[in-house]
Amino acid sequence: MSYLKTALIRLVKVKSIVTILLTITFCYLAIQGDINSEQLLTIFTTVIAFYFGTQTVKEDKNGKDN
Image (cartoon, rainbow, N blue to C red; front, side, top):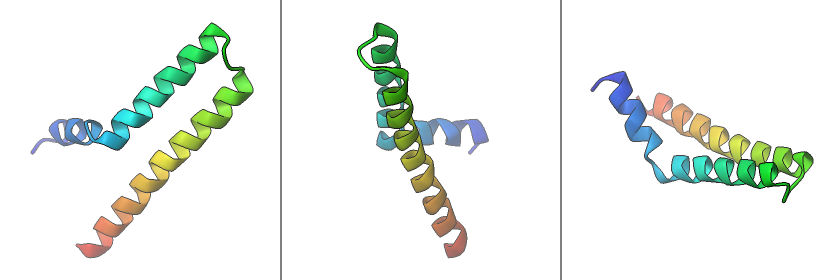
């Protein structure tokens, strides 16, 4: 399987979709003025840290099993 195809399959996973939707939603709210930049930064940092943190743990486990 090509790298691009593998990357697209990973992108479609639920966690990725939720992360992307949350990012878009909070950026929209910030543009509309419903939340301030500090709130956006806090929320966005939490979501991204969780996403990449779980991806790193998953990759570490896969690497150790092989």
